[in-house]
Image 1 (cartoon, rainbow, N blue to C red):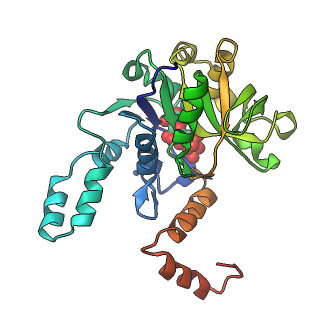
Image 2 (cartoon, rainbow, N blue to C red; image 1 turned 135 degrees about the vertical axis):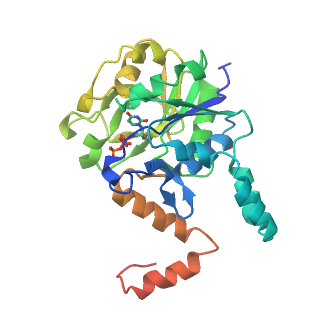
Length: 294
Ligand code: UTP
């Protein structure tokens, strides 16, 4: 039986240049979709999938992420005094258990592969989940839970994938698809940001992984890839020579909240799904007179 996955890594050290100036002093991962920051959605998804240890790879200007996952006694006291018990309960539910979160720093944003490597001491010699918080996935059960089912069946390394318009493949890591159903199929190849004509498929790596710890020694070579960054995909490609990689085409939808359009679309979709605001929000959209079926 495959070793249980207890730890999740959240790389949150990127510069978020596509969201400047909003991200000059505030981390991209704290941008809210409706009223929850992106990082909170990722932590919730991991917790729902059975994760017990939350490892954040942060950078300069990211201290607020650490504060977000800490108690805020003044705020809690004030909410209590004002009888805002629902808000108080929600704040407490959002927190990892004491001692179940760890923070380390990627001192230079050298790429996703380097950020993951920075978590090696905290992860140890264990399989781990990796969630990119700016890839927000709306799914029930959550995408990582769907991947855990594939992991229990097949072990090894698991990657969540999603189809995109073939013209967009050059913005993502792309996998080649082999035998097996959508819930668990063989991955035959992998390439980071390929040219459209060289892509093995239109299946993008959508920001959720379960990886074996052997990835760390490959990442430690610090080889640079696409865009001059240390790419995770390049090390996974090498790991494929000795270990299985399984793709999961999960039920759900990804919003690439690192891009403005993806972020705005996520806000629209999540707001329309919120019973407390959906009606009012729909009225506002209708009042804009847009030619939409909302
Ligand atoms: P992105 O590829 O979206 O990069 O990172 P970015 O730097 O954050 O944003 P742009 O492209 O400049 O707008 C995907 C995830 O990997 C993390 C980011 O924080 C994000 O969660 N990351 C990226 C790191 O932790 N370190 C890095 O060096 C690069």
